[in-house]
Image (cartoon, rainbow, N blue to C red; front, side, top):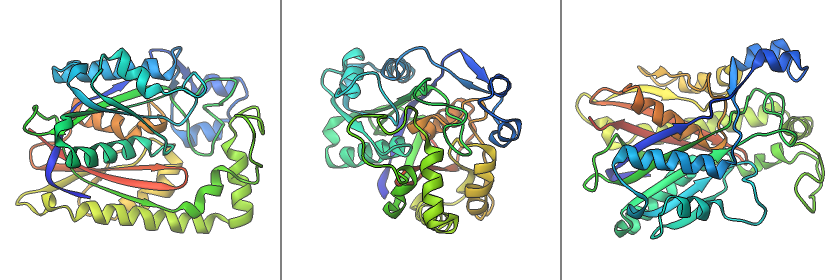
Length: 343
């Protein structure tokens, strides 16, 4: 989806708790072997004591303050997550809106697993195109991968899970100064891969009735026994190429002097990025593969916004430069997001 004019991204924020759990500590406790620790490439992962919606409120408040705005200016609030938010049959998006005093906003929860943050940005852009009177959309994400229900180090293959929250504001460029400009979003799904996170497990009547812990390794093993790795690898590479090709066809990159400075993969383990993302993203001529997340791990639905925050805070894009960020989530769904410097 190329936009007739770019949207502004203001106040992109990454909020991380202060506490860390080191990889060496996980190895000493027998939760992680040293070889896998090296493949993940994380010295430590952030660990939160607060519930995810509380983290999202902190991130949202910081994003609004950075933009010089308050909750009353928000017309749409979308919150994305992948893991338990602290209550059953409850809307965290409404909690976040209430705590931010976004009383005029429509709160919406977005469940597209790890691609949820990108999906929320895409939905926000579509709503703003259809209803410009909404004004400003706030997108938040937050997750906490706490014991005993989730092992952040060994609950999955090639991914270490970090706690944290993100937030960003999306709006028309005439409404407020922008930090970054959103030019294009492309999304591709391969629903035939949903079994990778279901495996051979029966449907359970309540959460974690099949397994006391979220065990993604178990379900992936079952999928690979039945389908093999080749099918997933082929689908992933094809989807990545489709989202990259779509984003690179955006009119913004046809401009004089336009330069794609970075391609940015999700915040997955080092070996996973090397195997699943670097080969395809390395095909983009002239762009540097920007590796992110060594100090955060995978942030659930928050990888995209976290990388946008780091692009902005580090002022990594000069005028006329662009970055293509890739997001992916179980199901499977891949998104590509093209942004440029607003300076």
